[in-house]
Image (cartoon, rainbow, N blue to C red; front, side, top):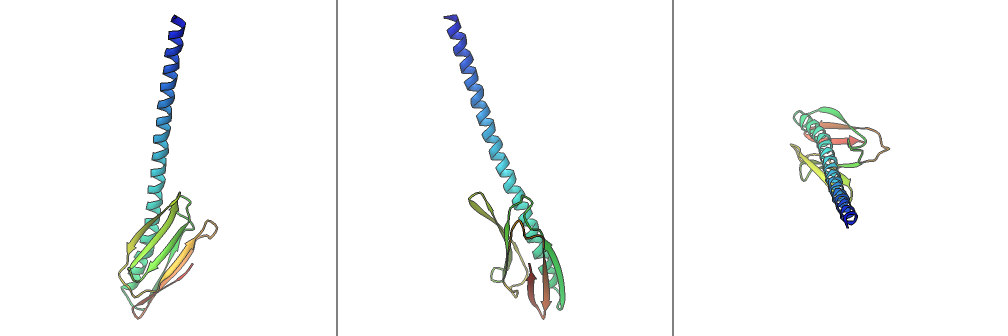
Length: 143
């Protein structure tokens, strides 16, 4: 009877330890996923802000131009899509995470700008965008 009790106690402790291990693994997986989402969002915000800041600087003075270099992927290695919208006066960056799409938008000062879309893939290298102000109309080209 004593051996049965010891075996049962040992089995209960092993099962309890296994359950704790599984819970810790789940918490780690959730935190890891959250950190990747935050890192992607910060990287996308940096890219959108850089493009929007350059557009806003060029917008302030006629007959000026500037360039901005954007990376091939986000810091997480994810591909992304850059979109400049005149109607919404904003620069948007969209990127997929798992089965969901994420996006970040940064406002710009003008709606007198050409619509511009650029999809970045892992083999597309860095891109240089040329931004120019011709009589108050902003033109974005490159890729």
